[in-house]
Length: 97
Image (tube, one colour):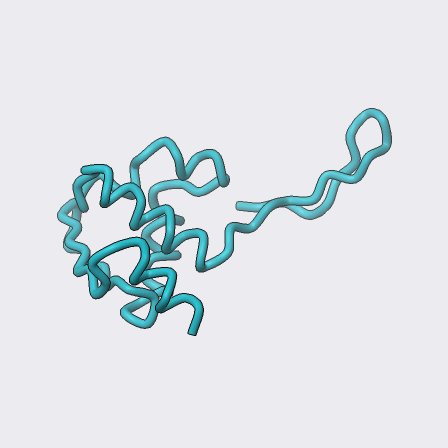
């Protein structure tokens, strides 16, 4: 869970980062295009760079729905993602609307 703003030892403000919906959609598409399976996509280490756990990734992808190019379906540990767009270029077109 993200914390509020803090200050480091030098007194500089540290602002928590919240990845945009567009960023989540693009990273999911990039991982898919690089051969990461639907079942392991949310476990990929790249999500940790943005402070997202496996469960947070599932929640964020659930919120995106088909309007952002994909639909995630889960049943226990089985995950299936239906990709409405066929490429990163198509996804960017969808996100730009």
